[in-house]
Image 1 (cartoon, rainbow, N blue to C red):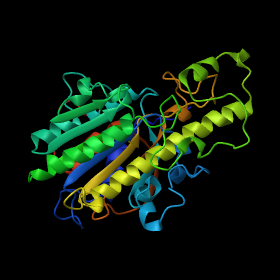
Image 2: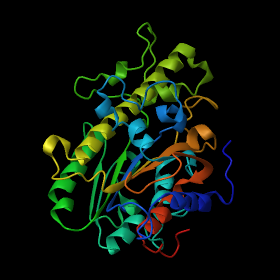
Image 3: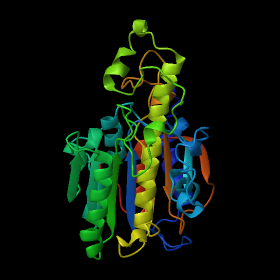
Amino acid sequence: MTRHAPWAGRAFAALALVLVACADPQRPGTPPRNVVLITVSALRADHVSAWLYPRPTTSSPGVDPEVRRFSLDGLAGQGVMFAHAFAPSAASAPSLASLHAGSRSLDGEAATLAESFRDAGFRTGAFATGAAAGGGELARGFERFEGFGDDVEDPDYAAVVAATAWLREEALASEAPFLLWLHLSGPRAPYAPRPLGKDDFAARFADPDYAGSADGSLDYLAALRDPASGADGLDLGHVVALYDAEIARVDQLVRSFAQTLTGRFDVLPRDVLNESVLVFAGDSGAELFQHGRAFEDDASLHDASLHVPVFLRHPASLTGKRVLAPVVELRDLAPTLLDWFGLAPPDGMD
């Protein structure tokens, strides 16, 4: 079970701010100009290579070392990782609401992270898939909000493309700093990783000798809840391999996006990655059949569903230890970012 201490949230903000250079001119280094927030659904921390998972899900193996610097492992290694970060829920919607409101709920009375940055003169854009695609309260404060649902062939890829276009055509065309939020469905079921270019992710971690009928479809995952399904360890292992392949696909999307942010590929006019604080977080985990007969359970309180990867990256000012051990929560990201940029937290934000 997860072990939340009552002081955990405040510990997150305090520890982060001790280690980072905020807008305070007395701090060393160059403060960040922008915020790039990337969140991913159903991403278990213990299935991320940088969190010591044995499969290379997020290390981009086989690519040039210079390119590998932009993998999730590479980006995390250039920043500060939180080894024990937890989401408030196994469901994406309440976890994302907590992250954006800096409290345990998001209602009409609570100001959002985007509203605070918008009111401070930042351009704000959000590009979301899955549970966040509908916008609703999560869209508050964003000048541009685009959601990509199941009617889009590849929602995650489409969101990355749209985010890049917004930066090129709108955000960087002005003199204002920006807050960009990119939310990817990633490994949220079904587990059916699409190819990207020549990369066949469905075969990335699959046992070539597996001859069973297991797949990552919603129908198959639902059938596994029945003890009479007849699934064995090889079947379950195949489904987990597909889940891990979805994570590897997210790693490639983020890697390409991060390289684009540096000005590579001649898409953007300048390097905005290094002038921005990059915040990466999973919004929840996944059971993967560890507790009961379910691969995902929105009511789960186990570490498998709540322990998520979180890291902050801004080499010009983020200094100190690279891995922090205290238990922290997603809801502390908003007040930490506001303090970092010298903005007062709004009423209702913890």
